[in-house]
Length: 115
Length: 111
Image (cartoon, rainbow over the protein chains, first blue to last red):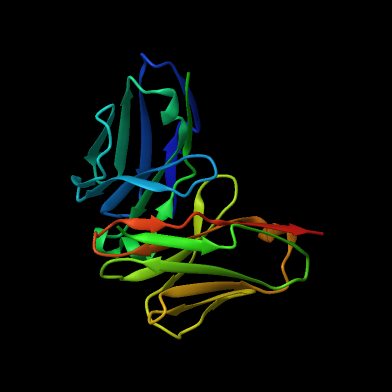
């Protein structure tokens, strides 16, 4: 299995809702990442997990809450989002954080719309 | 602050043409330069470059890095309509695990 699987593929949520995005990989990778990509913009790093511990938080608002329950799974919990948070949320993984430069594997993303 | 700039921002060509995409970077403690192709959703990995002057090739695509002048190019020869995509350049530097992406080049190949 050489894939990163993200669910759901599409999500529409209201500003008062609580939802979660899920990311799963079975490649034995120990580093996992969340990126946010707005339309016609490049991906921007949000969080990095290394060996299930949060190692980088790029000053992301607390309405985004990451969680890494085990080495294969990465969640992003969403609460009280704003319409400007609408974007494509990409998960990625790599063997180790130090090897993240050597080509992440990206998931196909969750397209989030906040109404 | 780390910065990656790509040019041109968009390019329209006909099948069979050769294109060159440019990427310049300013990254503290530079480690690597990566190229990705993004169609509808996930970026797909093309090349990773760490050493100057060594060309990487994959079929009709090739890429090279110049660490002295801080840039990389991605060449696509004999373009096909399936090459139409956004091509992203990204650089890894001091902050392990973080890639800084350029804005991307939108390539459109007409039949």
